[in-house]
Length: 168
Image (cartoon, rainbow, N blue to C red):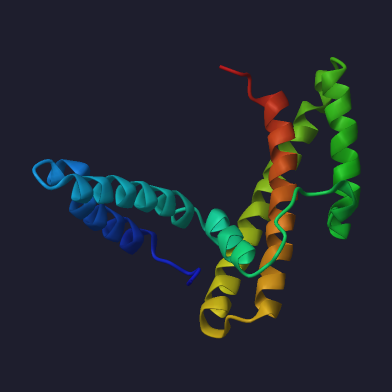
């Protein structure tokens, strides 16, 4: 399975297959053909949900190749983030305790982690291309490491957002 996919091409192919397999097209067909259409449409929709999301797509390929895709553990903090995470946790505790003076620090951290997330996504794109040409376990290991880093950064962003963005 390839990882570097064009979102536009993928969407186009999905819609083509979706129209061809849609149960409404099989209303006057045999029960077996109608059942096939329902099952095929369900499989197609599941595939679409996985393929359209680059992270889900990569996790699928990793699982298919025997890599464990578990939860990010706190002992897996990327070393270059240790200081930022410590400062972020302090600021989060201050805001949770009612001290809004730490909110600007959270805004800066949010922007910084957002940039890091963009850098990780860019690096993933490069590794996806490498996987498509080589399909080796070393590349998958690098993808897994970046996905773990991405998940960690995304969790940090979610924590900050929970305090900065009021729930609707």
